[in-house]
Each structure stands twice: as C-alpha cells, then as structure tokens.
Length: 561
Ligand code: F6P
Image 1 (tube, rainbow, N blue to C red):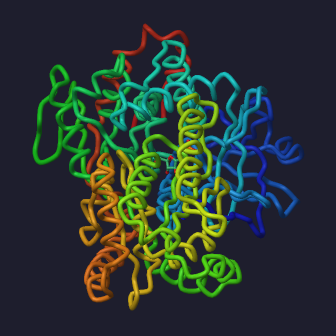
Image 2: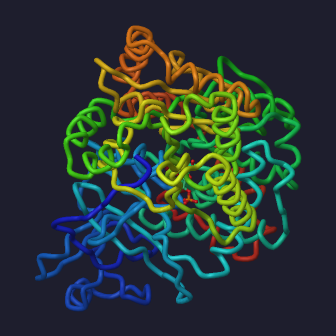
Image 3: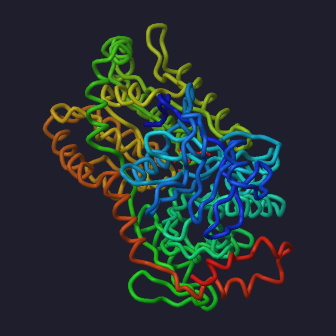
C-alpha cells in the first residue's frame, strides 16, 4: 500500500473558492480580490456567487462546477497532506490517505489541506479539484511555513516525541510560532466555507490546535481529531516545551481518537495532569468547562479489496518477473518509509545475526527491503539513510557471493498493485518498527496472502497492529537474537501452522476493515458535542490579547446560533 498511482480521469479543475463575510438572503458575488460585487459581474468574471448560505460558480464552461451547491451535512476532512488526484501525480499512499478516502467514500465531503506545493505568493483562496464525488480544497505553503511548521515543529519535534524519541527533538520558538501560524491559516481558509451542519474531522499531529482556532472563529460544529501516530506517556509528552498550548489544545475537540488503548490511556494520564481537569463519565474529560471524549479506533485497510488486488497482481508480468528473479530463493520482505522509527537498522542486524547463526540458509534466502525516501530535508532522516546503506553493504559484502546478494535494497516507491503482488510472493514479512501508531504494512501483508499457502508475519511488539494481529510471531526488535530466531522459525514453519496463524488474522481484518473504522469513529463523534457556551467563553479569554480583532469576529448569524 505504500504508494500507488493516482491518475485521475475526468478531473474537473474548479475556479477559486472565495472567502467572504456572510450577507444572508442577498445574491451577490466575490471578486478575485475578495471584494463584494454584483452577481452579474461575478458570473462574467468567473467569480463565485453567494445566495444566502449557498456559494456557487455560474459559468458557461462545463468544466467548472459548484462547490457548495449540495445542501445537507458534509464531512469536512482536514489533514496536512492531501492526495489530490491530478494527471500524472504519483503519490505516496500512507495510512492516512487510505483512511481518509474510506471516510469520504459514500459521504458528501470535502478534503482540505496542503497541496504539497511550496509557493511564495500568498494563496488567498484554496484550489479546488473535484474527483469521484470528493471535493479537494488545497492551499500552498510558503517556504518559511514549510520549514517552520512541517519540517520544524511537526517533524523535528512532535514526530520524535510522540515516537518516544525525546533525544531527537529540536525545539525552537520560531518553529513553534510557525506551527501556530499555519494552523491559523488553515482555520481562516476553512472558516470561510464551513456550514453550520458540517462535521469536521481533523487528522494528525500537524493540526492539533485547529479546533481551538475554529472555535475562536465561532464554529460550533462537531469537530473530531484522530492521531495516526503513537501517543507517548505523560513524562515524555511533558518534554515538549509549552506542551499545554499544543497538546492541551486537543481539549477543544469533541472527540480525540487514538490507534490503541495504550495511546488513549497515555493521553488520559496527560489530561488528568492538566490543572483543573476532571474525569467525567466513561472516557469523557472536562477541562476549563470544555468536554472532550477520547477513544481507541485502530485504523485498518480495505481488506477484501486488497486481497483481490493481491490475487490479481500475483498474475501480473511485474510479479512474474520479480518471482523469476528470485531463482528459487525464499523471500523475506521489509517495506517502510525511510524513517528512524521503522527499525530498519534493527531488522538488518537481525537478518545479519540470522545469516551468522544459520549458514545453511545462506544462498537460499534474500531480504528485499523497499524503502522510499522521505522528509529528506531533516538531518536525522539523512543520517538514517547513511546508516542503512552502510549496514546493508557491510552485510552484502560479508556474506554475498557472485551469484547471491543477501539484501536487495530499493529506494523507489511502487504502485499499489505491484506492492500487493510482492507481498503475496513473500514467504515472510519482517515488520520491526521501534514504535508505530498502527503499521498497515502488517495488515496488508496478511490480506495479500494466499489463504491456502500463507506466508508468516514477524511483527514488532511496538507496532499498534501487534494488539490485533496475534497470529504473528511477535518480537522485540531491539533483540537481534530474537529477530533472527523468529525469522528461522518463520522460514521453517509447516503449512498447517501457517494456516492456523493466518486464518483468524484475515477473518479479523475482514470484519475490522477501514469502513468499520470510519463508521465507528463518526458514530462516536456524533454522540459527543461541545457545550454551546464554549465559544463565548473562549472569545472572552482570547479577545484582547490577539493582534487582529477582525480575525476573531463571529458573524452575527453564527453568534445567534
Ligand atoms: O503516520 C503518519 C503519516 O501521515 C502516514 O500516514 C504517512 O505514511 C506518513 O505520515 C506521511 O508523512 P509525510 O506527509 O510527512 O510524507
């Protein structure tokens, strides 16, 4: 699943979505510079027209369609990265992307976030793309925003801390304020097209303060948050300077979802340590009069679809070529983004130990490590790349022969189908993260197997998936001997035991699939609502200290609501 092509057919690029204050009842337009103009003038210059609460474009060009024409509740998904389906766009499809697409399937929805592009010209309006009933609304980031918000606080501070790597965090006040600034930008853009009956679902650590910003702009909508990565224990969370401003902001959401009960309980401990926080009924907490509920919602995959994809992919020319290239060798597979949290070094050390201890397996097995590069501007990512390549060449140099390479190392990403075919061909998957929110490679490997002749999953006890995939051989990746022993056991496992282990895991994933995940989360969100007085409380608190009074103004229509 790590990557697949998103080549859109029948894409419709829309005109700009404009932002303006509301004038309920009147029909009027908004110029490209944000000024109110007549509906006729708007139509002639292709600008959006507002009619009461509705906003639409009036064009003779059929390629332009309306954004806000559909009435009824919409699901507004917000995430840092948005997988905009554009022709020729080959995109990484991490867990978040697959999850968001499932949430939007069969629902009227908008997916809002960063386009993945850097542009110095300030985007006044999001760019809109409509594809397969999903409206994508994206903004570009400036170089400075990208550096301070994405590379900075999100990936040099929050990512390592939440993955228990306090030693790698590089906090700076500039990055902190960049993170807050981009969250405000997201809120400003989003605020303009939010309707009162929209349900908002925010994803991942880049956007923790977003609900507070939206509440401050008067939005009473149900707003949920889901953390795709782990949540560390209290003492680790507290190493984040000014953690109350960032982690504490999660209390402005109605529902905060985590991958596992362990992550959820870590956050519960954090909440209870907040001054004035009280535990309410069940998993509800009250902080400064706000009520927030927390829960565990283990993310999953489209199990049946993925199993079908793998079955078909196994017959593809790509899979055949790959299998032929193995010339009878057993295949051990590792698939990860190049990231220090994935335990790639520990996996190679384990494989090295396996070859050392089991000379009879040399020349009979190969480890295929597929590792697309990521976040390469960050020094820890460059460092892990050097470490991995050095270690692999050492192992290949030590054990390799002219006719046999112990480890095949590939940095390019593969299409979703090609990857499914590789999963199906692999005798063993080695999934050894040091800490992982869920790890969908593990789930996809299980789904991709031939149930009659399945491979074996060797899985780190520190992946969220370990709580569900109990038929895997569970290992501590820090112990090379244990990884080597599990690998030996997996390669020699009789068919009957492989089936016994695989069958229940597949059954579990067929039921606990991505559709169920989205439905469970949204049902829980629907049950939880913030108290209406929250917004006035918040404004009283924030009002005078903010630089721009306008930014916090609530339109009259909303204030009455
Ligand atoms: O786990 C968080 C996550 O969003 C994954 O879903 C995805 O694989 C990865 O991070 C993408 O990271 P980035 O957007 O920094 O490339």
